[in-house]
Image (tube, rainbow, N blue to C red; front, side):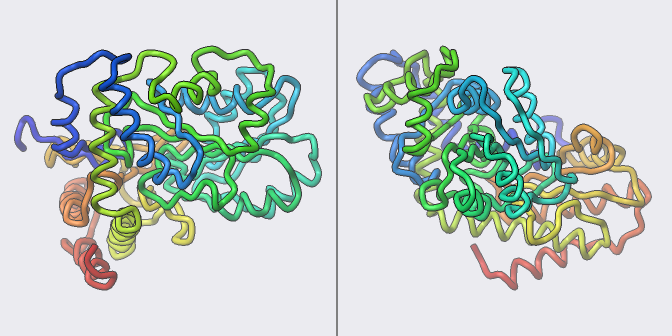
Length: 385
C-alpha cells in the first residue's frame, strides 16, 4: 500500500474534486468586500436549484448539526409540541436537540433499517393535534435508508398544519430534492457529503409558511437566528464571518453539478447504489435496508458470518480503502459504504474488488469476483451514466 494513499468510501467527509481544491486555494479576500458579495450572488441560484426551491438558501459557517439546531429554535415556539421520527442515529440527534431545549417531544421510534410510514405519522398527528412541527431525516446516514419524505409531506397536509422539517445532510445533491413541489417546510444540509466540499458549511431553506412562524417565534436565538441570515443573504452577504475559502469551493462544486446536470447526478447515484447492492446480494451478504427504501448515497451492510470490524481494518490497512462502521448499537455489526458526491461507477468497482479480497483475508468463503461481476452487469443493464 502506498503510504499517502487513501480511498474514502465513507458517508462523509467525501473526496474533493481537484477543481474544487484549486478553487479553495485562491487568495483570501475581505469578507465584507465587493468581491465576496459578487461570489455569494453567483452561488445563490445554484443552491436554490439543488434544494428545489424559490426561497433563499442561507449559508452558515457551521456543521450540519448547527443548522439542525437552527431549524429547531426557529420553528418551534415556547410551549409547543413536536414529533421526531427516529429511523437511526441522526433522527435521534434531532430528538436530543429538542430535549436540550426542554421542548415537549414525542418520539416515533422506527426499527433501524426500516423507513418511516407516512400513514403511521398521519394517524399519530390525528391523535395529537397539538403537534406543531414534525422532524425527520431524508437519508438516514446511519442505516442507509432513504425515507419517503415526499409521501410524508403529502400525508401530513391531509390531517395537520404542522411544519415538516427535514435533515437532508446526506441526501441533498445526491438524491432528488424538490422542497417547494413536495411541500417541505425546512430543509437542512451540509457541505461535506454530496456537495463535494470539506466540512464547515451548512445550508438551510424555509418555506413561506415556515417564515411566517419563524418571524412570529419568540424563542431566543442569536447566531442561529434565520431572520438575520435571510436579511443578509438577499443582500449577498452573511450576518457573521463567512468561511470564504469554502465559498470559493462551493461555487466550483455547484458549477460541476450544473455541468453534469442534476438529473444525471441523481441517475449516477442511483446506479452506484444498485451496483453496490447487486454485489453484496451476489456474495450472499445481507443488506440492512430493503431495496424500496435504499439510499442512493450510502449502503449499510450487515454481515452474519464474518467480523465487520476486522474486515474494515484489513480493508483500510492493506488496501487503503475506508468503509465506515455503524453507529450506536450497530457500531460493530455493520459497515457502511459511501457512494456520493465525487464518486463514479468505476470507483465503486474498485472498492468492491478490494472488499472481496479483504473478506477472504478475514475468512469469508466467497467466489472471488462474483460481487464485482454482478456490479458490472448492473452497470451494463442500466446503461452508462
